[in-house]
Image (cartoon, rainbow, N blue to C red):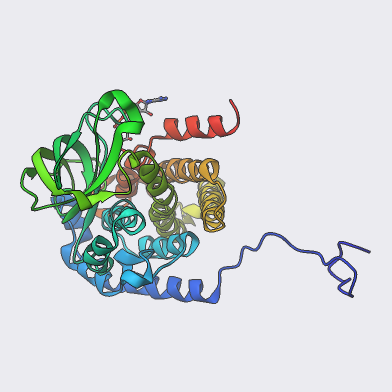
Length: 399
Ligand SMILES: Cc1cc2nc3c(=O)[nH]c(=O)nc-3n(C[C@H](O)[C@H](O)[C@H](O)COP(=O)(O)OP(=O)(O)OC[C@H]3O[C@@H](n4cnc5c(N)ncnc54)[C@H](O)[C@@H]3O)c2cc1C
């Protein structure tokens, strides 16, 4: 009978199972290596760094020694050259082992929004100049598109650029730049003419020491406090013409491409954090007793934990599907947005459950349970809000 796994004789159709959920041996090896590295090396003083809003410079350098800031930078430029799915799997392990979610978020922003647009769109000499040091973390990257009046409406930029001979001159203000206070190199979006909308937008590499570039003070944020964020000011900031990414007017395409990486793989930071959270909650529910009974023996508690587990698995599977589609060069706009919504909304909901399950301990900062919630809250806003992701999905559905 055609279509059956048992009938493989010549001339007969062979049943193809279609979906394969197994990770490769390489992916599993990377996963366990990175997980044990993160648990061993990255978790000292996280609470005090969070309280001090301090970036873990030493921990960043240790990640750099392992090549983690260059996971998906091509091997030719010193990176590991990993595809989307493998990158997500490794980043998830890093975030599972590393209790400093802000550090992993900074690493992901550096990679997806800073390094990868340079890898894809910069001139060869500039790839060689920047990418090897971005791959080992000695050069930190950032991305500056958002402005105070251009957030969700991202291409209504006011930041202007004009060409003068062999230079471009940039003027304007950017805000909410992840890694702003610590970055060495920025991918900056500016317009030749605001009336041209997205058609007028181009992207540029701007080095931190460029004349006319100034950074604001780090913002005081609810969460991701160890991932520093600032404004960036450009005042007659002159850069060489070669520092343009792609062609003039190609900023829209560059942004869309880097967003596919960012909206998918970057959110493995949160599936990793949710895995760590789930393990802590299960352990607590088994060991905390009230009325001579582990609290996890109460259905009200165990069902909450079950729901956390379902949310995590569903979000992770949507992420893996989106990454797999991107690796097959399929259009994954809808699936990437679905994964982003599922992960970020699950991260918030499960963090509320984790606090409730921990009772009073859940509210006290020293137990580091409430931090899951504070770190999760920005996730429905950064890289395009949940509302914008739903707009994208509804467009994909033909609405
Ligand atoms: C932690 C963090 C890190 C960030 N890192 C960076 C970075 O590295 N680089 C960078 O350039 N930017 C960065 N951002 C900026 C981020 O991308 C923007 O905050 C985000 O796109 C939303 O823009 P906004 O804050 O101006 O909100 P607005 O666009 O003003 O939105 C306000 C509210 O209105 C809703 N809304 C707006 N338009 C619509 C619409 N058409 N339909 C339905 N609802 C709508 C939004 O969903 C939101 O709820 C970061 C933000 C955060 C919080």
